Picture (cartoon, rainbow, N blue to C red):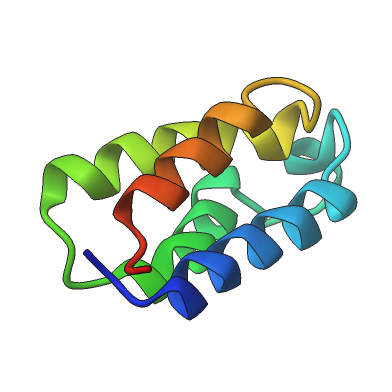
Length: 84
């Protein structure tokens, strides 16, 4: 489990990244990678088991590229790992 503030920070960072993402961005902005955005988004979750981080990373990447897809699943996963 992790402090809810950390999961909320991850959610906020994912929203910011999703707003800044557009199809073709990796081709237009030299040096940009989706992986860097995902890394930034999950930074507040460091210390969690690698398997948990891997699942969240996958969902974060999907939500950045398609904000309407998997956002509920991401939120549910973050809620599951947050301390009450």
